[in-house]
Length: 333
Image (cartoon, rainbow, N blue to C red):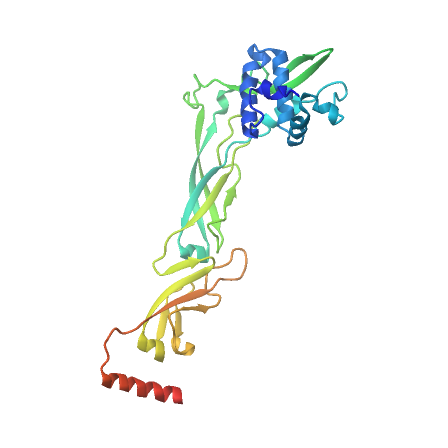
C-alpha cells in the first residue's frame, strides 16, 4: 500500500496539520505555473493538500492509501476533481481586514465605582489614496485566472494576483505631493470613551475601524480594542466585586466596642462595632457596599478584615485576679 500524497508534500505520515499546511504553501510558491513551475506537479500537491487537510479524508487515506476513493465511493464528481477551490479559499479567506490594535487604560477604584468618560487622542496612519493606482496586471480585480489541463478537461482557477498580492492596487508614492513619498497620511482623531460603573479587567470596549488602517479601498480597517487595568488603592483591596478594608483594633475595643470611620466612594461609612458584640480576628461583611456589578443595579460587599491586637504583657497575680473577677461577673450575668 502506497501513500504518495505524503511524498508529494515531502512530509512524513506522522506530520501535523500545521506541518502539512506549511509544506503545501512552500511548494505552491515553488511549483506555481505563473512562477515557471510544472503544472502537473502543482496539480499533485494541490490534490494531496486537499485530502490531507481534511480530517475525515485524511483518516480514510491513512487507512486505504492512494486507492482510498474507491473505498468510500468517491471519485470524479461531474468528471472534474474539485480540489483547487477549497485550497485557495482556505489560504486566502482572511484577506480583506487589517489587524486589531490593543490599548490598556488604567482606572482608579473611584472611577470603577462611579464610571467615567475618558478622552483618547489617536493617530490613524491611513494609506495615501493619491498613491494608489489600479494594478496593471489584474486591472483592479485582485485575482487572476489560471488554466490547468486535466486530461481532456481544463480547470479554470481564480487565485490572488501575484503582482498586487490580491489587493487590486499598486502603490506609486515616489513623486506623491500629499504623503511626500511615504504612502502614509497621519490623521489625528479624538474620541470619547464612556466607561460604565463596574467595568472589570476582563472586559473590553471595541471601537470599530480605529485599529490598523486599510491599505487599499478593498480592505476594511481593524478595530481598536480597549482593555482596562485597576490602579492600586491605599485603603482598599479588591476581590471580584468586593472591597476589602483592613481594620486594626485594640483588645479592649474588641470587647467594649468602638466607632470605625471607613472612607468610601459613596460617602464615609460610620460603624459602631458594639453592635457586633465581641469582635474576633476574622472577616465581617457589610452588604452592598462593594463595587458595582457591571450593567446591573447590584453591588458587591464591603468586607472588614478585622485584626485584634492583644496586649503583650506579663500579668501579675493581682492583675490576673482582677480580670478573672471582671469576666466572671460578665458571663455569670
